[in-house]
Length: 190
Image (tube, rainbow, N blue to C red; front, side, top):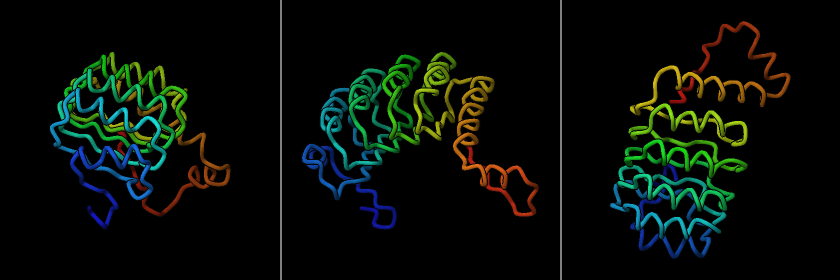
């Protein structure tokens, strides 16, 4: 376990019973490079369905592909706790991106989704553009090193920036609009 950040690196076989038991001490799970593949992603997805403790999940470099994402998408429809999901470099294409976008419609927990290093292109990104109005909590969608064109990335970025502006309290929005001598922080979304 990385005590500083609270992420626990566990083998899937150890994580599954804790996820199914809704273990309140397992809030951030790092399963990067765990050789999950689509079949084991199905086991993980089943355990995630009723879990309300896990808020962060890193699944990068697991060769999930669109089929593995299909399992996760089914679980995300039912999961109300997961706020951060990292799916970096998993061979996810437009089909998988569309499955995720559709699954996240109406969800209110997921704030950050990282799809960097995957094979999705403009079609997959468009599915997110279409779904973003219904994915109310999502503030960050990373699409670095994908086949998404700069124009499509800009569409996603504009929607997320507009959302952040509309969610600011009136005083914060006015302060943000006023000229400031302080250096502003910039967040990259993709």
